Length: 241
Image (cartoon, rainbow, N blue to C red; front, side, top):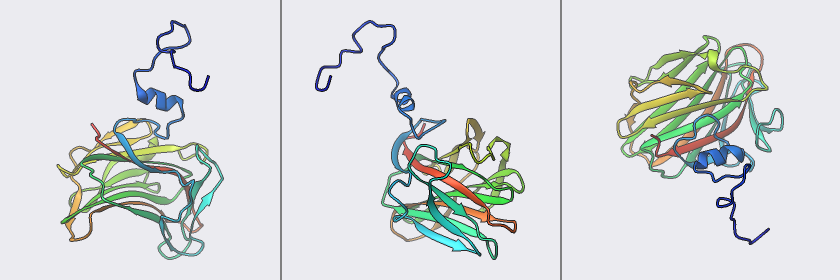
């Protein structure tokens, strides 16, 4: 009953018990974090309020970034990125956030529908004066490989892409974790598979700009037709182990 005391954790019953793990409770309630619930959620966007806060960049005929109700996962909308069929064939969205203290932090993205010949890039740029720190993960469907941008500004191969579902009806989850204090990656997860990237440093450059964090998601086509993918949410976490 509303406003009544909750005695459930004290009552002996075979179907009721107290929950010691709030991550378990979150999962039962339909958590947006799928495979790795470590860290503290500090920001997320599932696009239910539109794309007004996002900056869109397009290149090529037919390129588009728009809200969609196709193939929904948990939110009222997803974002459909359509790469152009000419020129640099690009569809990109990015959002700049205010100052967030992110030492050991993470970012998670959920997505579907990788076309047969595309490059998908998820990138976080942490701006802490006087430096920019780049955390970048590339999924190259043409080469069937996963790359991260290393300290030398080179995309280093870390795994094959076989762990990513290419069926448009199955949602993938990608999470990357980094440590700004050590300027290194910590771990990379593709669905339930973990990839050790702890020996790879972050690409860092000097830049005297305002402290901020930039979240960017890009789709670049490599074939002739307009290729597309869907993104369901983006998440930032802090205090990662």
